[in-house]
Length: 324
Image (cartoon, rainbow, N blue to C red):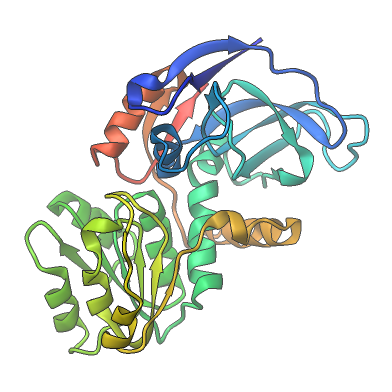
């Protein structure tokens, strides 16, 4: 038997309940994991609230974890009992043990701890596709990254700085500004005290940024568009403050023939080769010390509701893990 965090319907943090279930035995193409650390991500909130509706209830949420293989299906040859692995993008991570498809598992190198992997894998792969796939960040890039002190932000800003970019990050407090500067930001903007559009224009000499990465949504739109140079790119990859509605494409013309995309990590790691490639790049920059992963909050899995309250209340920084 395995304990899980389940929801019976969409709702607030109180909808998360601690339940006992049978993890089952792995079939063809599957392995069973004993999970050692589970990552907390904003997409978990979207699934809980119904912004991203779930098809069936009761449902176990959570999208990433690390752990140890404890049983393998009859046709599995590239994984064995005892292997340390991590995954991202598989709904149902809030569990002590679970059955997972073997081709979604990535073996962990010796220099990456389980907690580190769970804390960074989904966020790190998100940073990977944003910086390496959606827009090719390099030494000539000037970029704006909203929520620079958040889980994705701290990874992405370090990585972008390693790639040579000029990184402007928005934050909500002096403490978060210090954190963002210590983790790759060239400049920070406290949006509670400064107008980020005006500040970006000052910092860029009126030119604007090549790319804006925005996971906030409603509260930063359409102002984010005013931070982009002509023919630049607006990357809207999250909705922390609510979804962007009624996007008038004519704005893109008015603001300088801008490009816009609404990507998700799931599309970028859908193929096995892309998943492995992204994981290797991530493990490389972390293993070489270019990107440091700060696990700043730890909660027992059974206390997931408290973790959600803190995440939604913007009381967390860096990465958070749930411990089974």
